[in-house]
Image (cartoon, rainbow, N blue to C red; front, side):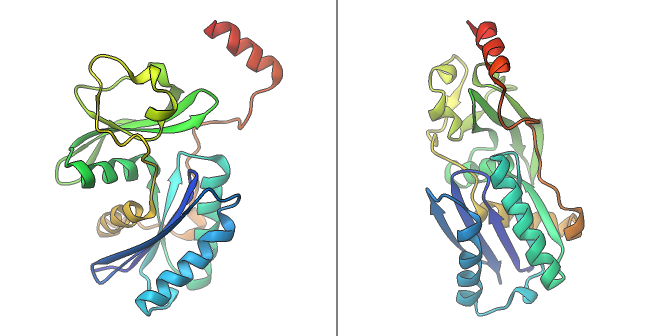
Length: 231
C-alpha cells in the first residue's frame, strides 16, 4: 500500500491528508486569508502523527483545479517544493472528481455532477460515473450556473448549488443535499492512491494547475457588456 500525502487549497477550505498503511488522517482549516500559511503546519502535524518523514511517502497528490486561481497555484507550488526537496513524484487530481468521490462516500451515488462556485456568476462543473473507478461523462467546464446540463439523471453536489439556488431549481435535477461540499484532501488522497496504482505519477517539474478561466477579473467595459447580454 502506497503512502500518499495530499494537499488541497482550491476553495475556501484548506486541507491536507495522509494515507499511510491503509489508514487515512486529515486536517483542515477554513476561512483563512492565505492557505500558504496553513498547509505546511498541517503537513508537519500529519507526518508527526504517523511517525514518518516526508521522504517515506511514495508520492504527493494535490488538487490541481479547477478552483480559485490563487488556490490552485498554491497547492501546485507547495507540492512542487515538497516533492523537489524529498525527490518524490506527484499526482495531480481534478478537484471536481474529488468532490464526486466525496459525494459517493457519503451517499453511495455512482452518477454525480459536481458544481463548484467559481464566483463572478459562474460555476466549475463536471459529471462522472463510477463503475470500478470513475469515468468522466462531461469534462470540467466553466459556465453560468443556468446552463449546466446533466447527461441523464445524476446526483448534484457542491457549493455552487447554494451559491446559485435559483439556477438549480429546475426539473430533472436530483440534488443530494450536499450543497456545502468543496474539494477536500481526504478524497484527493484516495484518488491519488488509485492514480498511483495506474502508474499516473509525474515528476514535480511536470505538475501544472488546471485553469479554465483565462482571466481572473473582467474589465469595466467587459462587465458592462456581459450585463447587457444577460439583461
